[in-house]
Length: 237
Image (cartoon, rainbow, N blue to C red; front, side, top):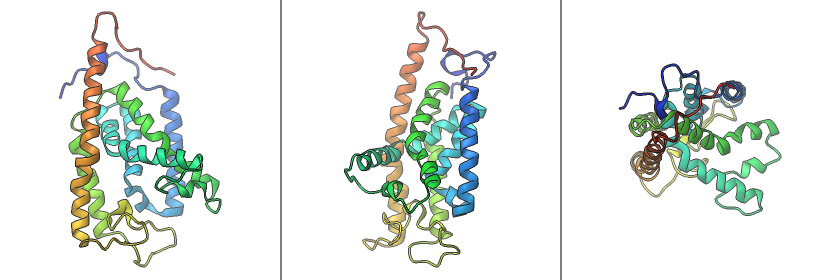
């Protein structure tokens, strides 16, 4: 990997990420963590989107490209579907129904407000990749994280129909038992479904995102080293 500072930055740069963003994002994540831990328990943080949320915290503070890159590889395409489904539901058109809960008045407004991070987090991650650069180790790194999370969810956490320790305990985390959160799929043996996820997600989601981000980063770097462009300005506010 090229260890030179991304986008022509020197070792004297102050920061690539505005302090206002660092503090606001960290505060949001802290509030979400406390609320989710209380309502859903710690295993809720094995969802891919929550893992990406914490990787972004590491990214904004360390300013190392690997963390934002892994998170972007992992959730950009899945969360794009979330965004489309949400906008469709907002307009009165049901796409797949994965965001129906966002319009369920029986769910507290604070819970739905916190969950809206699914919409803006991929946008933030793309911004971080633009600022910090793309680390090509992200594909392997995120795949390992995702496999570990899926194996834990399959072998340790409750599946559909299993007894729960408390009403809101996460089950069928990352859909390792089937696409329906409350019903296990019956099309194939469970281990085959899990294997399909472990192979299919990298092939269908992670690899295309990795290729797109690597190409985008290459083009951005090429533009930044032209004589007229100069160095990218540092962010200090």
